[in-house]
Structures are given as C-alpha cells and as structure tokens.
Image 1 (cartoon, rainbow, N blue to C red):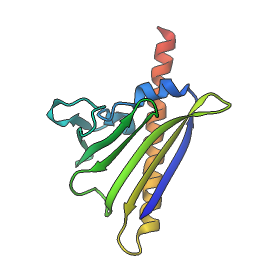
Image 2 (image 1 turned 90 degrees about the vertical axis):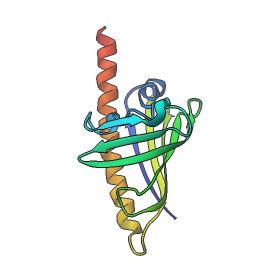
Image 3 (image 1 turned 45 degrees about the horizontal axis):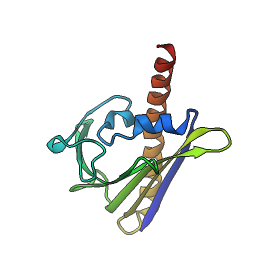
Image 4 (image 1 turned 180 degrees about the vertical axis):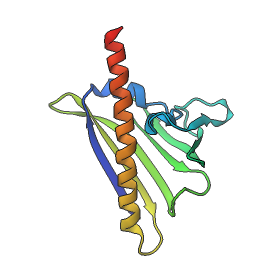
Length: 152
C-alpha cells in the first residue's frame, strides 16, 4: 500500500474553510469551476454512501463518500468502478485542521492505494501534483467567497 499526501495552509479560519469544502458534491471547487458533477439518487453531498458522478475534460469518474465528519472536518471517499489512473484500493481523505498559532486552516489531503509493480513512486508523485492543483483551486474559491462576504 502506498500513501500520497499534500498539505497547504489556507489563510482563513478553519471553520470558514470547512463551511465551503464540506459538500462532497461540489466537485467544481477543485477544478477551478470547470466540469460537471452531481450526486446520484438525489442524496446530499454530506450523506455517507452518496455517489458523486463527475466529468472533467471528457473523463467521467464515480466516487463514493465513505465517511463525513463536521466535528473532525473531514471526508473520505473511494472510486466506484475503474479509477482514471492505474491504481486499486484507492481511498482518499480531505481534512481541514486548525493551524496554530496563525489561526488559519491547514488542508491535509491524503490517499492510500495499491499501484502496479514498479509504479508506486510515479503514482505517489502524480497524486501529490493533482492534490496541489485541486488545493489551489479550493483556496482560490474560499478566498473569493470570503472577499464577497466581507463586501456585503
């Protein structure tokens, strides 16, 4: 089993960041507003078992929400069916934690997976790079939301 991890400080209070990022169904937070996504069966994006069906750049993935906690500020998901990259047993966790003493949010994104023989390091780096891009999109959305809230 291989683990890939990425962390990033987001300069807003952790509870504000979590209020934006808590909905598993809001896939566009992580794609700079591109693509389409829905939660199948009319479930809510914070319901364990919900399946997110997302399409970006012609690639469709389905992901199941395995765990969701407002108290611990995280959610965990897996792929339903074939992932868009060569891994098996993929489980990812997105968590926001208080970053003391700054008072900002610390985003921690991790994934555990099995890669084909000889591909573990390549897949680990690929996911770290993906996490970095998704985190940058999330941060931009959060900062824009905070600016809009401050101006109203």
